[in-house]
Length: 199
Image (cartoon, rainbow, N blue to C red; front, top):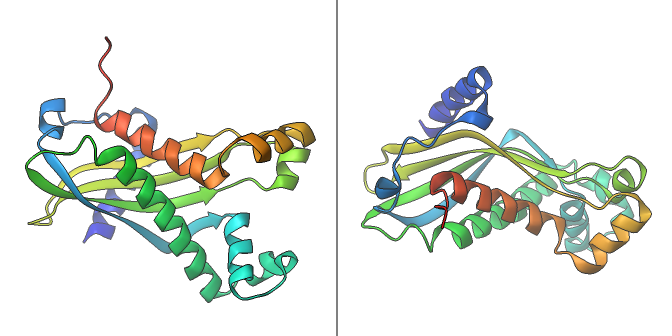
C-alpha cells in the first residue's frame, strides 16, 4: 500500500518538479504530531553507491578492502550496506525531528530511498562532484496507518572537497561524508516540514 502511494507521489514529482512541492500542513498542524519511529525502505531499484559501506562489508568478512567493490555486488553485501545506510538515515531524521514533533498525535516517518550516491576519492580528485541523496518521505498516522503528508522526492547534497588538497582537508577536518549527507537531508526535510520563522 505504502509502496503504491510512494509510486504515485514520485510520478507526481516527475510531472510537477519535486523542488517546488509545498508543505500543505500549517505549522500549527505539524505541531500536533508526535514522532514514534523512522523507517527506511530500500528496494532492488535503489541506487546505493557508498564506497565506505563496501569497505565496511569487506572488513566484516575479514577480506581485503581492495576487493570491496567486487564483493559489494553480492546480495549479502547489498543487504549489509542497505542496513548501514538505513541506520544512518533514520538516526539523522530522528535527531532533527524528535525535538520538534512532540504533539499528541503519534506518527511514523517512512523514507523511500531512491538514490544514495557518495562520490569516491578518485572522482573527487579527478573531476569533483558532491555527495547526493534522493528519497520520498511520508508521514503516516501510527494508529490507523493513514497517510498524513508526503514529500515525493527530496534531493539533498553535501559538498565534497575537490582535488588532492580538498580531499585531504575533507578527511582531516570534516565529518564522514555519509554523516554530512544524511544530516543535510534530515535538516532540509525538517525545514520543509516546519520552516524557521524569521526573527
